[in-house]
Length: 211
Image 1 (cartoon, rainbow, N blue to C red):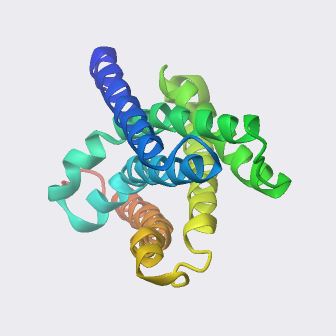
Image 2 (image 1 turned 135 degrees about the vertical axis):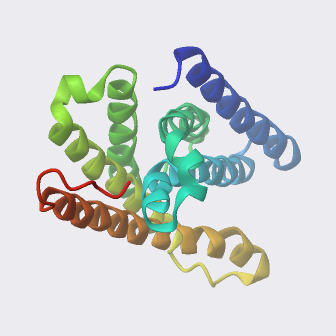
Protein backbone atom coordinates (compact mmCIF):
# COMPACT_ATOMS: atom_id res chain seq x y z
CA UNK A 1 0.00 0.00 0.00
CA UNK A 2 1.40 3.37 -0.96
CA UNK A 3 2.47 5.87 1.67
CA UNK A 4 0.15 8.63 2.80
CA UNK A 5 2.65 11.23 1.59
CA UNK A 6 2.68 9.76 -1.93
CA UNK A 7 -1.11 9.68 -2.06
CA UNK A 8 -1.29 13.27 -0.82
CA UNK A 9 1.05 14.38 -3.62
CA UNK A 10 -1.18 12.71 -6.19
CA UNK A 11 -4.25 14.39 -4.75
CA UNK A 12 -2.66 17.84 -4.64
CA UNK A 13 -1.32 17.49 -8.19
CA UNK A 14 -4.71 16.40 -9.55
CA UNK A 15 -6.47 19.24 -7.74
CA UNK A 16 -3.97 21.80 -9.04
CA UNK A 17 -4.35 20.60 -12.63
CA UNK A 18 -8.14 20.89 -12.33
CA UNK A 19 -7.80 24.36 -10.81
CA UNK A 20 -5.41 25.54 -13.54
CA UNK A 21 -7.74 24.21 -16.25
CA UNK A 22 -10.68 25.97 -14.63
CA UNK A 23 -8.85 29.30 -14.33
CA UNK A 24 -7.53 29.06 -17.89
CA UNK A 25 -10.95 28.35 -19.40
CA UNK A 26 -12.61 31.03 -17.28
CA UNK A 27 -9.95 33.50 -18.37
CA UNK A 28 -10.75 32.80 -22.01
CA UNK A 29 -14.53 32.43 -21.78
CA UNK A 30 -15.40 34.57 -18.77
CA UNK A 31 -16.97 33.68 -15.46
CA UNK A 32 -20.56 33.87 -16.64
CA UNK A 33 -22.71 30.91 -17.57
CA UNK A 34 -20.91 30.20 -20.86
CA UNK A 35 -17.45 30.24 -19.31
CA UNK A 36 -18.51 28.24 -16.29
CA UNK A 37 -20.14 25.54 -18.42
CA UNK A 38 -16.98 25.35 -20.54
CA UNK A 39 -14.85 25.02 -17.39
CA UNK A 40 -17.21 22.31 -16.13
CA UNK A 41 -16.72 20.34 -19.33
CA UNK A 42 -12.93 20.56 -19.17
CA UNK A 43 -12.62 19.71 -15.47
CA UNK A 44 -15.21 16.94 -15.87
CA UNK A 45 -13.05 15.31 -18.54
CA UNK A 46 -9.93 15.59 -16.39
CA UNK A 47 -11.80 13.96 -13.50
CA UNK A 48 -13.10 11.26 -15.82
CA UNK A 49 -9.64 10.29 -17.07
CA UNK A 50 -8.42 9.84 -13.49
CA UNK A 51 -11.54 7.87 -12.60
CA UNK A 52 -11.24 5.69 -15.72
CA UNK A 53 -7.71 4.62 -14.83
CA UNK A 54 -8.77 3.78 -11.27
CA UNK A 55 -11.86 1.95 -12.54
CA UNK A 56 -10.19 -0.15 -15.24
CA UNK A 57 -6.61 -0.52 -14.02
CA UNK A 58 -7.12 -3.87 -12.34
CA UNK A 59 -9.15 -5.23 -15.25
CA UNK A 60 -6.56 -4.19 -17.81
CA UNK A 61 -3.80 -5.90 -15.81
CA UNK A 62 -5.89 -9.07 -15.51
CA UNK A 63 -6.93 -9.19 -19.16
CA UNK A 64 -3.96 -7.64 -20.96
CA UNK A 65 -0.98 -8.68 -18.89
CA UNK A 66 1.91 -7.36 -16.86
CA UNK A 67 2.37 -4.20 -18.92
CA UNK A 68 -0.66 -2.74 -17.12
CA UNK A 69 0.46 -3.69 -13.61
CA UNK A 70 1.81 -0.16 -12.90
CA UNK A 71 -1.69 1.24 -13.50
CA UNK A 72 -3.20 -1.47 -11.31
CA UNK A 73 -0.78 -0.72 -8.48
CA UNK A 74 -1.69 2.98 -8.67
CA UNK A 75 -5.46 2.43 -8.74
CA UNK A 76 -5.84 3.83 -5.22
CA UNK A 77 -3.87 6.96 -6.13
CA UNK A 78 -5.87 7.46 -9.32
CA UNK A 79 -9.13 7.07 -7.39
CA UNK A 80 -8.21 9.55 -4.67
CA UNK A 81 -6.76 11.93 -7.25
CA UNK A 82 -10.12 11.78 -9.03
CA UNK A 83 -11.95 12.61 -5.80
CA UNK A 84 -9.58 15.52 -5.18
CA UNK A 85 -9.76 16.95 -8.72
CA UNK A 86 -13.54 16.65 -8.71
CA UNK A 87 -13.76 19.18 -5.88
CA UNK A 88 -12.95 21.90 -8.43
CA UNK A 89 -15.73 20.61 -10.66
CA UNK A 90 -18.18 20.71 -7.76
CA UNK A 91 -17.11 24.26 -6.89
CA UNK A 92 -17.93 25.26 -10.46
CA UNK A 93 -21.39 23.70 -10.10
CA UNK A 94 -21.86 25.78 -6.97
CA UNK A 95 -20.80 28.91 -8.85
CA UNK A 96 -23.20 28.08 -11.69
CA UNK A 97 -26.04 27.93 -9.16
CA UNK A 98 -24.86 31.18 -7.53
CA UNK A 99 -25.07 33.11 -10.81
CA UNK A 100 -28.59 31.86 -11.44
CA UNK A 101 -27.98 29.08 -13.99
CA UNK A 102 -28.94 26.18 -11.75
CA UNK A 103 -29.00 22.80 -13.58
CA UNK A 104 -32.19 20.74 -13.70
CA UNK A 105 -33.21 18.68 -10.67
CA UNK A 106 -32.65 15.46 -12.63
CA UNK A 107 -29.01 16.46 -13.13
CA UNK A 108 -28.55 16.95 -9.40
CA UNK A 109 -30.12 13.56 -8.66
CA UNK A 110 -28.05 11.65 -11.22
CA UNK A 111 -24.72 13.25 -10.44
CA UNK A 112 -25.46 13.84 -6.75
CA UNK A 113 -25.62 10.09 -6.21
CA UNK A 114 -22.35 9.73 -8.11
CA UNK A 115 -20.77 12.36 -5.85
CA UNK A 116 -21.98 10.43 -2.80
CA UNK A 117 -20.31 7.24 -4.03
CA UNK A 118 -17.13 9.10 -4.97
CA UNK A 119 -16.51 10.42 -1.48
CA UNK A 120 -17.88 7.38 0.34
CA UNK A 121 -15.29 5.21 -1.42
CA UNK A 122 -12.59 7.86 -0.98
CA UNK A 123 -13.28 8.13 2.76
CA UNK A 124 -13.04 4.38 3.27
CA UNK A 125 -9.89 4.23 1.12
CA UNK A 126 -7.92 6.29 3.62
CA UNK A 127 -8.06 3.46 6.13
CA UNK A 128 -7.79 -0.29 5.66
CA UNK A 129 -11.03 -1.02 3.79
CA UNK A 130 -10.69 -4.79 3.92
CA UNK A 131 -10.28 -4.68 7.68
CA UNK A 132 -13.21 -2.29 8.13
CA UNK A 133 -15.64 -3.91 5.70
CA UNK A 134 -14.16 -7.32 4.99
CA UNK A 135 -13.08 -8.38 1.52
CA UNK A 136 -16.64 -9.03 0.36
CA UNK A 137 -17.95 -5.73 1.76
CA UNK A 138 -15.12 -3.74 0.19
CA UNK A 139 -15.69 -5.45 -3.17
CA UNK A 140 -19.43 -4.75 -2.99
CA UNK A 141 -18.92 -1.08 -2.08
CA UNK A 142 -16.54 -0.60 -5.00
CA UNK A 143 -18.64 -2.62 -7.42
CA UNK A 144 -21.80 -0.63 -6.76
CA UNK A 145 -20.14 2.76 -6.34
CA UNK A 146 -17.66 2.65 -9.20
CA UNK A 147 -20.19 1.28 -11.66
CA UNK A 148 -22.71 3.95 -10.72
CA UNK A 149 -20.09 6.66 -11.23
CA UNK A 150 -19.23 5.08 -14.60
CA UNK A 151 -22.92 5.08 -15.49
CA UNK A 152 -23.24 8.79 -14.62
CA UNK A 153 -20.25 9.69 -16.80
CA UNK A 154 -21.56 7.54 -19.66
CA UNK A 155 -24.96 9.22 -19.46
CA UNK A 156 -23.29 12.55 -20.10
CA UNK A 157 -20.77 11.51 -22.74
CA UNK A 158 -23.10 9.31 -24.82
CA UNK A 159 -25.87 11.90 -25.06
CA UNK A 160 -25.78 12.72 -28.80
CA UNK A 161 -21.97 12.78 -29.08
CA UNK A 162 -22.10 13.01 -32.90
CA UNK A 163 -24.25 16.14 -33.00
CA UNK A 164 -23.09 19.76 -33.10
CA UNK A 165 -20.22 19.64 -35.57
CA UNK A 166 -16.57 18.62 -35.47
CA UNK A 167 -15.67 20.53 -32.30
CA UNK A 168 -18.38 18.82 -30.27
CA UNK A 169 -17.47 15.42 -31.68
CA UNK A 170 -13.84 15.89 -30.69
CA UNK A 171 -14.98 16.91 -27.21
CA UNK A 172 -17.38 13.99 -26.76
CA UNK A 173 -16.68 10.98 -28.98
CA UNK A 174 -13.36 9.82 -27.41
CA UNK A 175 -14.88 10.09 -23.93
CA UNK A 176 -18.06 8.34 -25.07
CA UNK A 177 -15.95 5.43 -26.33
CA UNK A 178 -14.02 5.23 -23.06
CA UNK A 179 -17.22 5.45 -21.02
CA UNK A 180 -18.61 2.43 -22.88
CA UNK A 181 -15.34 0.50 -22.88
CA UNK A 182 -14.82 0.98 -19.13
CA UNK A 183 -17.74 -1.17 -17.89
CA UNK A 184 -16.95 -3.83 -20.51
CA UNK A 185 -13.38 -4.07 -19.21
CA UNK A 186 -14.55 -4.08 -15.59
CA UNK A 187 -17.04 -6.92 -16.10
CA UNK A 188 -14.59 -8.94 -18.19
CA UNK A 189 -11.85 -8.45 -15.60
CA UNK A 190 -14.09 -9.54 -12.73
CA UNK A 191 -15.25 -12.59 -14.72
CA UNK A 192 -11.65 -13.54 -15.52
CA UNK A 193 -10.63 -13.27 -11.86
CA UNK A 194 -13.63 -15.35 -10.80
CA UNK A 195 -12.83 -18.09 -13.32
CA UNK A 196 -9.17 -18.05 -12.35
CA UNK A 197 -10.05 -18.26 -8.68
CA UNK A 198 -12.35 -21.23 -9.27
CA UNK A 199 -9.66 -22.97 -11.32
CA UNK A 200 -7.04 -22.46 -8.61
CA UNK A 201 -9.43 -23.72 -5.94
CA UNK A 202 -10.02 -26.88 -7.98
CA UNK A 203 -6.29 -27.72 -8.25
CA UNK A 204 -5.28 -30.90 -6.37
CA UNK A 205 -3.50 -30.34 -3.06
CA UNK A 206 0.22 -29.95 -3.50
CA UNK A 207 0.05 -29.14 -7.19
CA UNK A 208 1.86 -25.86 -7.94
CA UNK A 209 -0.33 -22.98 -9.13
CA UNK A 210 0.53 -20.93 -12.16
CA UNK A 211 1.40 -17.37 -11.02
